[in-house]
Amino acid sequence: MDKAKLRKQIRALKAKYNASAWTDSMLIMQTLEADEHFRSSKTVLLYHSLSDEVNTHTFIDKWCGQKLVLLPKVVDDDLELRIYHNASELQVGAFGISEPTGKLFTDYAQIDFVAVPGIAFDTKGNRLGRGKGYYDRLLPKLTNAYKAGICFPYQLVETVPTEPTDIKMDVVITLTT
Ligand code: ADP
Ligand code: MG
Image (cartoon, rainbow, N blue to C red):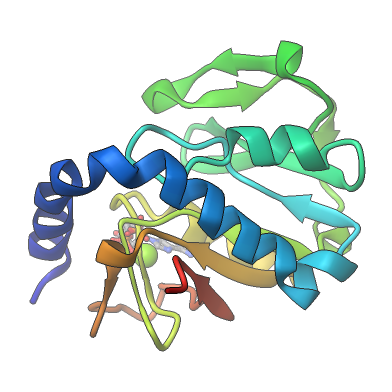
């Protein structure tokens, strides 16, 4: 299966799982919270979720007082990272994503942990994004970060098609039943 076809297939499934999306999101983020790599991390890159992604909003606000929380901002073809302290520092940017307006952060090697959204993942850690390659370009700079893909169970598939530029996750976190 090619990437475009898999993106379409997963998107078509979304409506079926809307009713449980919020509850499932809370449970998935609890699993993330229990991960030893997250627990020991000091500087974390999270993502401010869109409506089709595992919801991270309450999670971000819970942890921004305890760890240094960074969020991405789309700048042309790249993701810039900015420090997040509170919701007053969010502004809707490209693709309707709420983006940070805080201080620019460029010490990529300091980042211990990154939560990565995706359209689909497989159990080997391969990731399918929205098709613009933003995380494939960003993640190689995060030389010390443990990479956790975050998704709903219907987004975890047997095999995600890959290309050499695709960056693999260290773990995929989803709902554990
Ligand atoms: P996504 O990861 O968002 O699903 P793709 O993997 O399909 O998107 O990649 C989208 C585009 O970005 C592709 O044309 C790919 O060649 C390009 N790309 C990915 N990583 C890099 C990189 N490190 N440098 C330059 N282009 C890249
Ligand atoms: Mg990719």
